[in-house]
Image (cartoon, rainbow, N blue to C red; front, side, top):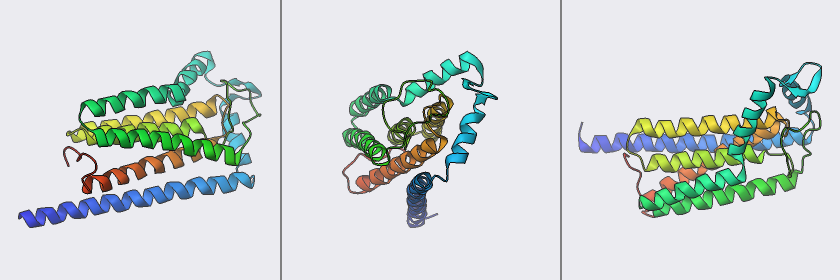
Length: 237
């Protein structure tokens, strides 16, 4: 294969990846607003109640399934989506990127997480959905319910962190590992919010959709900045 044909094949792969990411971003945004529309019309109430009660002992909505140990584990998992933990982890990764001389990536990461937090807060204030009152809350809550801030910020933070760390890593298997861990942690945080009774399932689905779209958008921005020489090139690309 000639150098020209190799370059052409690489360009096609890059364009395909970019197009796929754009489609997924659009799909995530569409899913979020579709859920928001259904929520405002009350169409999700039956679904939300069914899922929430499925995680409780039949006939006793005050008792989560799985026993006390599972409830403690869910409280531990939900903390992974809290503001303090996410800020601490983000600060550590920003510092790592600075040490790795990835200053552009570090700045993009910091702005991404701060922007995601602002968007989450604004949507919560705008929709102002009450928290579930069907079951007792398993942990303290202070804000509105839609979208789930823990779920959205877990997606925004962990997926974006995975993207930034993957850019600084040459080995493909390590890149995949970062992304898989980020997705698993994001899912566990969302599930814990429903299990603890502090969010309706649709709150979590909306948070995941918007958070994933945000993280994918950051990946696209990083690629665009890389082409312009405004951010460090991805290793192994």
